[in-house]
Length: 243
Image (cartoon, rainbow, N blue to C red; front, side, top):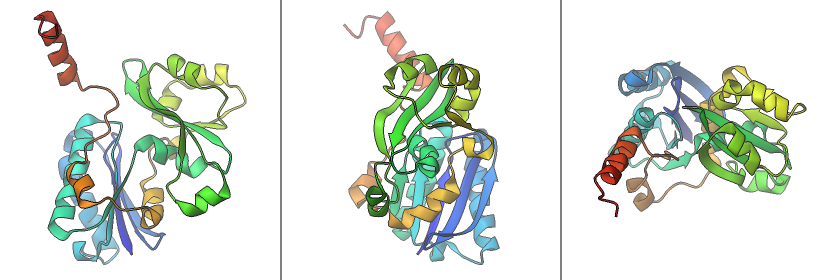
């Protein structure tokens, strides 16, 4: 089974190909404003480098968010279009869960944080319970604190115990605060701050595919309202329309 995985949730977008869990290659691209063009070009380059064509893709894996609102819409639209054209089975995962997965040893807790700007982070706390869970579901990461958009201080207050690791652009942005609060916890930096699309490509063949109804209704995981939605809500409130 050949899997194409893609992520447009971050300013650094990425695509990866794997065959039966073995990575074939990956590509990255920058600038979310050009994701619409860059994503297609990256997929073309990746397919060419592996001597594959779109007809050779057996499964799609897409990151649903949270992250760049524009990027997420582009990524999901691309995946849905490819699914509709070729009826390729699709699996999804949220960016926070994907960030945590490679660092989740059985019994470990990992906090994933993505920089949401305005002093906030998208964050969630995950645990992998046992080797049995790992064997049953390659994408298993159990939520101890569900994804939300908060200040890092508010999110830390929601955690009842310290994680073994922090990962993501939000963790890096607020690293001094996290180190002061949890001096013994590992802070993962470098390329691992972004959702690992290569890892997603390697596990997606073992994840359950969405049914057709779920694909049609699939929407980005925004976690918080967009700027346009906040403006509409503010306007409605100012005009007394919410009363």
